[in-house]
Image (cartoon, rainbow, N blue to C red; front, top):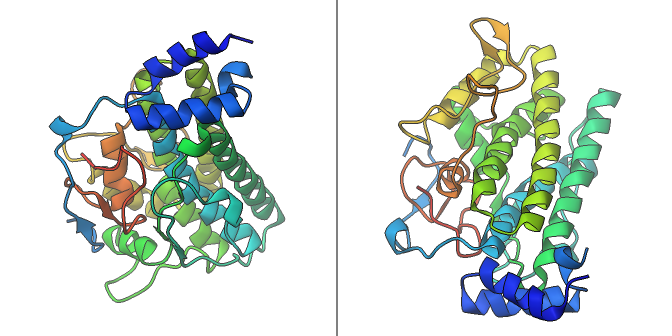
Length: 309
C-alpha cells in the first residue's frame, strides 16, 4: 500500500474544497486508505442558489457524492419494487439534510424472469450506495428527499402516457415498472459517461468505469424487456420528453430508430452518450432551466454539485 504522505497529497489534488478534503482524508485513512489502499413538466423547480460561473472546480469527492445522490434514487426505486421497502437507515445518513422517500411499494410481478433481474438490479444499486458511502466515509452525503410518486406522474403527463389529472404509478404492474425504470436508467449511464473526464484520480476513474458498465447492463436489460413487451412507443415518447430537458442537444434515443430495434443508444461512432452533471440534474429535477430542486428531488440533491444547467 502507498504511504500516508502520498495518500495525503493524492487526496489534496482530488478534493478542492478544504472542509470536504478534511472529511475525505480522515475517512479514507480510518478505512484503511479506501480505494487507494484497496417548465416542460408540472413539477416545481426551485431557483438556483448560485450561477454556474461561481461554482468551484468539481473535485473527485464531489463527483462521487453526486453519483451517490443518483444511486440513492435508483436503490430506493428498485428496493421498493422488489422488497416493498427502501434502504436501511444505516445507509441513508451523512452530511446535509436526510430526507424522506415519498411513494414506493412492491410491484406485483407475474413474470419470474422480470422479478429476478429486478432483484439483481436492486442488489447492485444497494451495493453501489454502500460502496460510495464506504469510500467517502464521513464526507458522504445523506440521502436527500426523494419523490417516487408525483415525479413519475409528471413524466407520464409530459410524455403523453397519461392525461392531466391521471396518475402514473410505476409500482402498479410489471409494464409500468419497466416504463418507470426506463425513465432514469439511460440517465445513469450518460451521467457516469459524462463524469468520467472530470475524475483526476485514475483509481477512482477505474471504479467509476466499473459502475458505468454495470449501469449499462441494467439499462440494456430494461430496454430489451420493454421492447419485447411492446413498449417501444411509450419508451420513444419518454425519450423525446427526456431529451427536451437538455435544449439544443441530442443525447437520447428511444427503443426504435427508423422502425428498427434500438437496444443500445449511441452516436454514429458507436459511443454512448454523455451528460454533464448539470444536464443530468435537468432530467432528475424535471426542468429544462437552471434549478436547485424539483422532480425526483423536491429539495434538491445534497453536496456541492446541485445546480442544473
